[in-house]
Structure formats: C-alpha cells, structure tokens
Length: 213
Image (cartoon, rainbow, N blue to C red; front, side, top):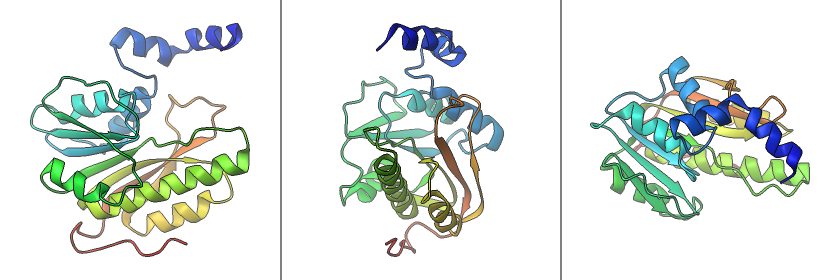
C-alpha cells in the first residue's frame, strides 16, 4: 500500500462512514443503497450472500431482514462470525456441486434473494480478469436459478467487458424485470457493475438452467 492510496482511502466518505457505523467494508453501502431504491430484501426474508467475506453485505442484509429473517453467507475464505441468531455462515467453494443443496438445507427452503459480490483475484491482465469475473457471475446465476423462490431477486457483480452483454441477456430471461446498475458507493473508476434481476419466473424446484457454453 502506498501513502497516496492510504490518503485517498481516508478521504473516501464511504470508507469513513463504514468505520463510524462499524461496517466491515465500504461496500456495505452499495447493498444498502440498492435495497433502499429497489426493495430487493425485505423484513422476514431469507437471503443468500455469495462471496460474503469480510461481511459488510451480511451486516446490511441482517439489519434488513430483522429477527424473523435469515441470512446465509458463503465464502471460500473464513468469515469472522457476526454472533447474530439470524446469520449463518458456510466456508465452501461456490463451484462445489452441492452448494445449492446446502443452501436449501441451511435456509430450510428456497431463498427470496441471492446476492453475489464474488470477484476473482485480480492479476492485472484485463482480459483474464474479465473472463474470470464472467465465470463467477454465471456460477452465481446457476446457484440462484436452483435456490430462488418464485418472484425472488438477484444482485450480481459483473465487470464491464465484451462478455458482459451476453451474460446480461441470458440472465434477463429468468426475471420479469432486470437492469444494470452502479450504486453511488461504487468507486467511479471501478469497472464493476451489478446485474439486478427482479421477479424470478420459475419455481426453484421445477427448473434448471441449461448449458451456458
């Protein structure tokens, strides 16, 4: 980390707000802003957070669903426990075949919303980083298609690039409404963008996503 980078981060309003509010990451505000605008998570619902570490989105989802709801965080890395009765954690690879079954078992049924802030380890080769992000986004969609309840929602991170449009078009087929968005809390220079899908069309136990290749 350079002194310039640290100075820039300290001036970041969302970084400062996250520290004040006790959120584990500034990205918590990306989810908070999206929930306030589109209502993708509501009190009493069941939510899955893919790529949940360090837990900023888990904190926002937990606050939103309240004590009657349930949030399940999944990451290949260890997530520091939130010590909250409405939060469960799973340390596992999202590419594991049994991820959808584990989600259904942990939630006790289908999810109302699937969130994915999954991102690859950035190596600095744009075409490789983009391809890896698209693959993670497709995996998130595959999982969502298997665990979402009817009329459920998704919010999935993408990177801008040549494969983004096809992924967006494929994903849109599963939802009544969809769009791309960039929350205010996203850094302007970042290539990230989010796919928002509202109103899942198929029941979780009756449909399976076909081949994506």
